[in-house]
Image (cartoon, rainbow, N blue to C red; front, side, top):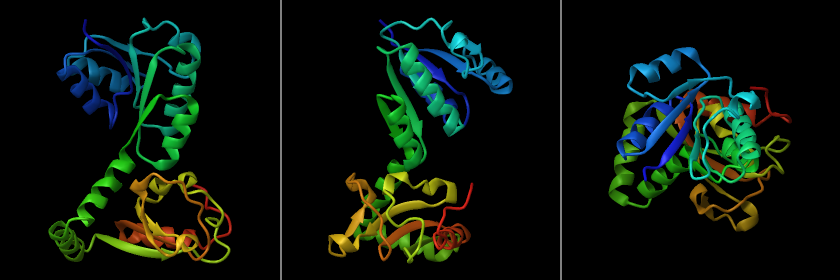
Length: 235
């Protein structure tokens, strides 16, 4: 029997996910709420496509979902993706729901909404950086890249007194909204040892902690300025 996957979203992630699933021999039913993307999916050869408002349960209920089907949520809008997972979990409690996230913040929400598995692209990126930094030759190459492009930088940023980050849990912070990747931190409560994000441990941030990030210089500056505030700036 072929696996049957119902894929929600044909945007920045959905296009590649749909092609990959299809290439592995699975049957794909594409669901899209945007008419333009729906037409693109049809033009790209996906015969099973549905255009629907995924915020309406009565429309989701019309999908031919079987108990063995896998539901994959890759909507571009994080809020819509979380809402969709929540709805699908209520409507189809026995099906496996997989979601893709590009931030720690979104990953946490998707898991709380009921996703069985979340592929965290942010963590994948951080993990790659972690692996590079553990290899001396690759580290020198990366340092040379950072030094010569003048576009990306590593930055150590100390959390100042009165920052909105003080007392917050690491997984609550949406670094993606600032356009940077969180690599790791030095937690003063844990003896000033460097902790990579890939360790998977939960951390409470405190003033005086040092966080290490990579990103464009202007994004790093914007983030450093933002954390000086008592309340997080609105997106």
